[in-house]
Each structure stands twice: as structure tokens, then as C-alpha cells.
Image (cartoon, rainbow, N blue to C red; front, top):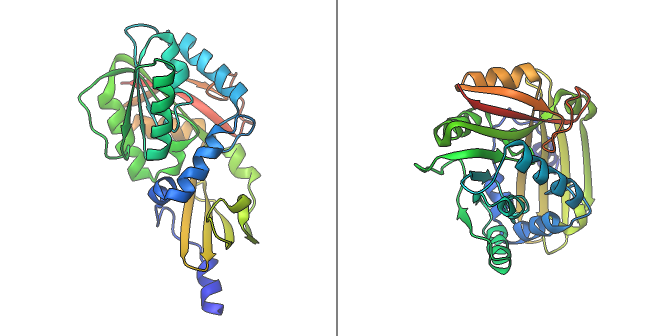
Length: 279
């Protein structure tokens, strides 16, 4: 038992494990993620409906989207942004890990007579010769990736952008990093049985890596029939650090906002959004 508890509470090296596929493709947890996405009143897997409506309206106006524009959404989930952006008349593509989320998005698009191209893929591996006027990655998905994975994504974004095209994504800030405290807790059926259909004990360890401004939520889940560990990484950025990382990948940040609804930037925001383009 002591050895087991030691393993549960062990601090891994930064990005030592990557379990995003498990989170998004496991049949049960992916369904629970979809439920969170579609809960319009909370900021969980997606932000609340009021914010998404305001955000989509700002994106359409700021990037002047309309017929002839081409947009691709990485991590589109059940189509909360793609369905709204499609109302501008732009051509929309969405990519996601979760087949369940894409099935929902496809049904909704058909019901609303929207022609949206949904692609079931690991976006780290997605390749296309198609060019886009706007590339988006929303809900801080970028921060869950390792430096090597982020470089792969930025390389893909660079290749997909039209001349004059823009990239929009959001990230966690240093203000958010400072607000988080390390902790170790356990609970029966944590997060309202999010992790398993059967009763399970979940251990949550939150770790901070001060030297690289990285956070980790490590979930160790025990049910009668299974044990698994899920690692959720959160890279936190300053304006300077994200500008440097983008610049190293030939992408230039043009503007910074407090969020993807275009609110004026504040260093106290727990997240911030950047608009960038190719060098």
C-alpha cells in the first residue's frame, strides 16, 4: 500500500506522460466531456453560451469573415464555434479527437443546413495542402501540449495559413500560474462520476513546476475493474514567452487580448488570446 501511495503522489518530469487521447477517445469519459461541452451554463469543457456567442460575433467582425473566407478550428468539439462561424457564410472545417463530439456536430450541421467539413483526427498528425484565412485553437488547447508538440502545431499552422491569414488561440497566463496551489486530494466518484460509470476512487495531485511555469493535474482513478492515470498539463505564458516561442517558429504576434472575445488585455487575466500571422 505504501508503494502504491508513493506512486500516486509521485511528481513526474515535465511532459513525461501524454494522455490526451485517453481522455478524448475513451467511450465513457468522452461522453461525459460531450455533456460538459453542451452544458450552456458552465465554463468546463467549453465556456458558457453567452461568452461563446459574444466570442463568435467578435471573431466574425474582427477577421471580417464572410463568403469566400476559409476557417479551420483545431479541437472543435461538438461544433460550438464552427456552427456559429458558419453563419457568416465562410467555409468552415473542424478537427477533433472525439468521434462522439464530431457525430453530434455533424448531426447539428445537417439539421441546420450548414455545410461544415468535420474531420476525425489527432490534430498533431493532421496534414493538408489546403490554405485558410483563419486558424483557431480555442479553450487553451495549445497549453496542454509539450514544447515539441507545440512546435509541430505551429509548423502546421504556418503551412496552412494563406498569405495575409491569421492565427487565433488562447493560453493560460502567469497570473493563473500564481493563483494555483499544489494539493493532493482524493474522493469517491470525483466530479460527479466523470471518470467511470462504476464507483471509483480518484486521487488528484496538482503539481507546479516553477522553473518552466507549468502546471499538472494528475488524476489516478481506481475502480473495481480498472486503474488508470490521466495527466492534464497547463503551460502558462507571459506575453514575452509566447512571442519568443511563436517567433522561433516563424510566426509573429500582431495583437493580444484578455480572451477570444476581444476584451482589452490585462496582465491580471488568467488567460489571454493572441492574434498572429506568418513572418
